[in-house]
Image (tube, rainbow, N blue to C red; front, side, top):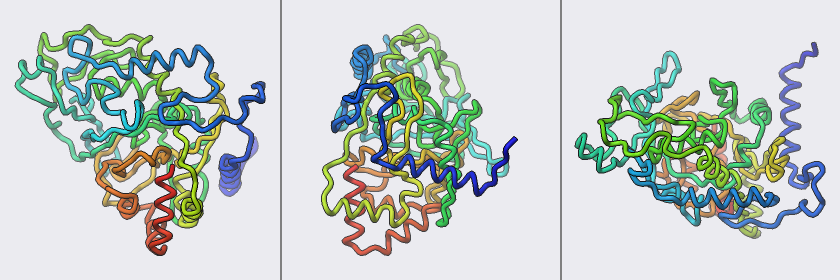
Length: 401
């Protein structure tokens, strides 16, 4: 059996990422016609290029599900944060950002480095609304605080553009990114889940597949049960009172869930804004201050049965790894991520944002950079050393993505 040294593995990983970052390398899947080689720019809400007619039909079916307003009679609640996917993901179009933030509550045991998401009590998402039926039965207007929680975190609504491409990145690619040595102290780790898969969705990389992520959103955000989450939750560990759950479980079927998930899977990432001399300079500075150690400009998808997702470049500006952002950012744990660890947030779609970081507290990119501690301390210091003009150029580049 051939054995490799750590240095050899690091070199191989470095070569992989260099290949991934070659923006001029071919993206054409084997056997596809040459006319598919160069897709044009995509606007927010556009489907991916190269979808088949049946996939486009499924995309539009799913769009209708995404926009559907649920009621208690059709499956809403009894606890919920929103009445539809579109209620949160709507800026600038369906699938975009939202202006609300959800609440996560968990318990972290430091000595054992274990995280309890309090799912037996209805966690980790603390729903902010209750249906009229639940209000009448229990006298509550939202989910009560979960007993035993040690960490609370706010989570803004991210875009879902381009998530199908992230879903198609192989676990091996993400793991290879974690093996690249960075002298400035960056040492991201893959979120290896109990299933053995690598998590890449959610602020803490708690979910490995997009289908599971979308099913979880129906359940956690709207209280809508589905084939992957078929049983209603509790109210702080107490079963739901009789008569408050009006729709039989599961409240959406596999066909409806597949359509909604396909809409998200087939959404194209928006094209960046036209580059200017300032943003071109800012792009060089972004690399110079080592932001690219975590916000890797481009990675590649692996094999997918869907040609539109197969062997494609993904300009996500993320390594999809967990990184420690320091004491000042500690809040809730989740999955294998400790309170201060977060997945590198993809930056495509930054052009639409007006609040930043996982909690939305930072009002500008400059403020967000200032909050980057832990593994990002060196990059934060390098950013501070730039002239005001150079700092503005770097920010302009980020906001063009």
